[in-house]
Picture 1: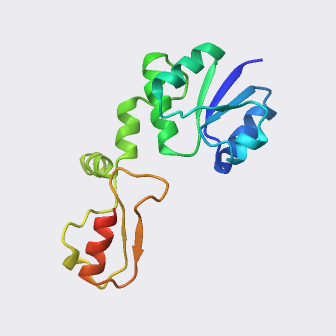
Picture 2 (picture 1 turned 30 degrees about the vertical axis):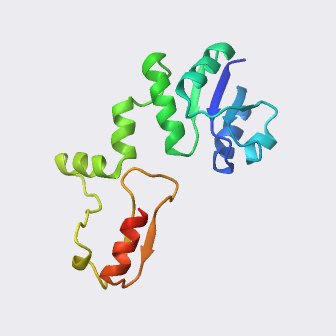
Length: 164
């Protein structure tokens, strides 16, 4: 039976886990929070901070994993890409692709260069004051630092930018 490492223990990755186990794979889930859904639900939970690429690569080699599967967050994609750059796995995007897709500013540049519509970056709060806006950091994920504002003042937008 082929062994798979799924780098995510969050409930959002449960459908991925279910698909892989139903397909007959020996699935091991990796994450640092033993209280997460898959950490508790999977008999093959490994308590490891998969943001540590070296430790995760060592685990991949020790378990002789045939497949490496990212979960539902940017960090697991980044780790899978970094590992796959050194030990190729099918279906894993190159590090540069993951970086562009994961960084909003880099993606905006890529989209503009390739005529792909993308959300605009507004530098001056006064330009959008009074209009609904979503303020996001360029390098965060999973909703961290995101603020949705309806008809905000320039000061409220400034506070959201500081948070981001």
